[in-house]
Every structure is written in structure tokens, then in C-alpha cells.
Image (cartoon, rainbow, N blue to C red; front, side):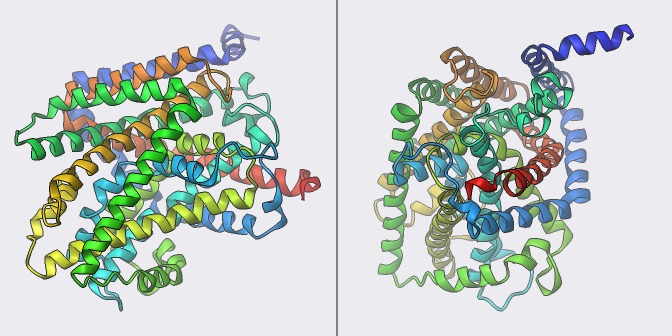
Length: 501
């Protein structure tokens, strides 16, 4: 055996050390290139992400449809009766759904609540028999509905099955590689999962921090500088770290319950304001059409086909982004789902959050369409993801109150996303333990904050865009891992675990 083989075998006998070295090298390389060559780095990364979206876009579409159909199939078979762990669930239904929903969508619901439906309303991607308003909502449903939750749900179900049925650590590599701690495949899979998780939460924190800053400037009458978002990042990371240190029941659950409760109140208020003005929400028509057209839309086929440019800018981008978010969202959902049956898990992760999201976008979207059609609002009012929701509330009663609640919700949604990521990253760092040591939670809370702050300092908005592009790049290798895990999971269910039926 040559010296290189001996060195590789010795390194693989210490997988946690190798993982730490690879993660540290990635962070240093990313930040170093970003600092020394920010424009070149951003340009090359943008070209690579655009190439991947163009070349593998249809593959993402097939993978998304496969995930939805597989979960629905499992829910309809005897497999759905398998219980994930103990006899009694750890959390009641409301807390369980509040935690998974806050983590899975978070501040994006407020970032896009008005901006995205209005964009499709003003620039429809294709012709449709639906009205402009209903068609705009249908495409919003498509991008935020069953497919993203299927990515989260399938990965989460696999992890939950590993942890609570197979009683193995929650390391993604443990499913494919057996004793993965001693295999190079296992190490690379864990590194990839950690990188996707880190970049996902940093991108969300950067965008959400900027939205909070813009909102505070609008509410209190000042013009914020982009770098002032650093202060927002510091506060969010501090509170998220405290929440992660308190644990699931004392910290994360309570914040999620409060956040979802307030979001429901805000949605009901907007709906009531619309009903008083005679706004017709038309939810069932849009939902029925979405479900009827879901499969051809998912594959971009036939008369429902849209232009390639739109697919690359929107659908391919979303599918890659949701897929790259699946590691930390899926593992977190798995961690809080002990005691649930597989059928209940699929209902709560795939169906209920999708319906909640559809109601949310319908209420906000139809109200925004009414404001535009009646000439009350201007077309440019809702163009920015940072300010659209706050400009929207300027046209409703109690604007100061609703904008204050929205500001608070962006803040708490960010906290629930970051504290979930801290908890999941700590699980990976602590050999997959379901209750990782607090030193790992402190460390990841600090690292997430520092990574985001450094990105703001180096490139301000441009490098945050680069993080989103890098997340798209990471989505491709992760998708291969995701697909392999799904097929191996089916093998476990139908070839080895029939005794659970």
C-alpha cells in the first residue's frame, strides 16, 4: 500500500476531523475569493448557476414531481401505518405544524406575499383560461405549494425513519453507506449537507435582515445604509442561539407558536378588510385548476408550457433553492416528528402547509389585485421584495399596527429559521445526536452570524446574491444524494420492513 493510500485510510478513520477540515477549507476559500476577487467571483458563479439551471432544469422538474407522487403513494399504502418512534407524539398538532411551517417557509411568506402574485398578474408567463388574478395565484401556488413541501417532506421522512425506526444517528450518509463514518462517500455527503444548510440559512438571514432594515427605515423615517443590516443580523443570531440553547420545547416551539398565531391574525384581518370592500377571493377555483394542471405544469408540457427564460428565472431557480433547503428543514422536521405515523407525517408536511400557503397568497394577492384594478395603488408599489408588503399595508386600515406586526413576524420567522438551522448543524456536528451538546449550538450560532456579517462587509448585496447562486450549485450534487436516499428508502420499506405493516 503506497503512502497516499495509508494517509487516506488514516484520515477516513477520523471522519469528524476530516469533515471539520473540509468545512473550514470551504469557508476560507469562499470568503477569500469573495474578498480578493468579488466581481469576478460573482460573475463566474452567476454563469455557473445559470448553466446548471438551464442544463438540469428539467431534471429538477422530474425530481419534484417524483417526490410529490412518492409521498402521496406512501400515504395511501399500509406503509402509512408505520409509527416513527414512540407511541405518543412529542408535540401537539398545532405546535408541530407551527414549528415545521415556520422553518420551511419563514420570512419568505412576507417577502413574497404581495410581490410575487403581482408580478405574475402584470406579466403572465403564458395564456390561460383563468382570469389574470386567478392565473397569477395559480403560479404562486405552483412555486410555493406541493413541490417544495415534498422536497422537505421526503428528506424529513427518510431521516425520521432512520432515527426513530432504525434507531441510527441522523447523519444523511448513514442511509447509503452503512458504516459511513469510515467511508469517503459518507464524509462527502455530510460535508455537502452541512454546506447546503449553512448557505441556505445565510441567504435567508441576509435577505431577511435587509427586509427588516428597509421596513424599519420606512416605519421610522430614515434611509438605512445596506451595512446597517449587520446590526439586525447580530440581534437575530443572538436570539436564535438563545432559542436553540433552550431547546425544542422551551425555545423553538414557543417562538413558532407565537409567530404562526400572529400570522393567522394578520391574514384574517386582511381577508376581513377585503370582504368589506367586496373583494372576491376565488380560492376554490384557483385550487381546483392548480391540482388539475399540476402534472403538466410540473413537467412544463403541452399547452401549459411556458418560455425557457421564465422557467430558468423562476421555476428552475425555485426548485433548486427548495431542494438545497431540504437538508436542514428535513432533518429538523424529522426531529420534531417522533411518535407520528407516516401517514400523519405526510398529511402535516405536504398537505396542511400547502393549503395554508395557498390561503395566505390568495388573501394578500387578491387584495393587491383589487388595489391595482381600482387605481388606488400604483404598479410600482409592489415591485420590491423588501418593501412590497409594507407598501401594501399603507392602503389598509391601521397601517402602523399591521406594519409593526409584519415587522415583528419577519423578525420571528428569521429567528425560527436560524435556530432550527443551529440545532440541525449541531446534530450533524455531534455525531447525529438528537440533543446535541450546547457547545455546538453556541459555535454554530456564532459562525452563522459571522459568516453573514463578513458577506455583508465584503460584497454587501452582491455577495449575498452569490450565496444564493452557490446554493443553486450545491443543489445539483445534493439532488443526486437525495435521489439515492429515496430509492434506498423504498428498498428498506418494501424489501426488508414488511413486518411493520
